[in-house]
Length: 149
Image (cartoon, rainbow, N blue to C red; front, side):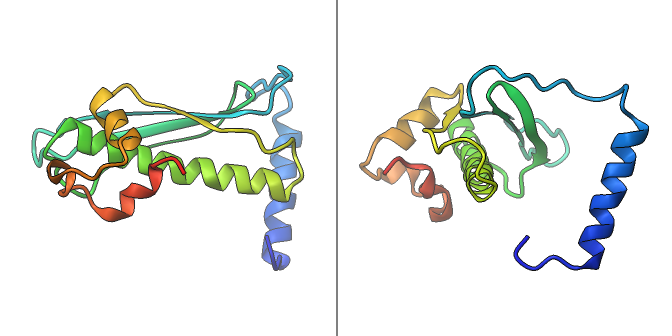
């Protein structure tokens, strides 16, 4: 977005042509009076019977309208459901930050507090507890930016 080229312009034209051809189809986005960014993340712990890797996923919405989603098999085998949920929260947090920065660059709405929902109480406890316990040392340091400031 900082230095667009002709290829980028061609992609925009292609998208606009696609939208013009498919006017009767698509997702409905409603103005519900809010521009708050909300994320949901969840995991399937050791769900793959072959390699016991977990699948994590998230979905992001702005003002109740779905704008981003992803599901991916994780690269490591997690030793606990809390660990894999914590890793999923880290990936979802990256996406939340990216969406917020994009909206700020586009001057869309005002910067509000973002919310991330997770259903694993142990992972939530790791995030909220500022004391780094010996039991959580197996979780990589790059995931710890999820913690609140």
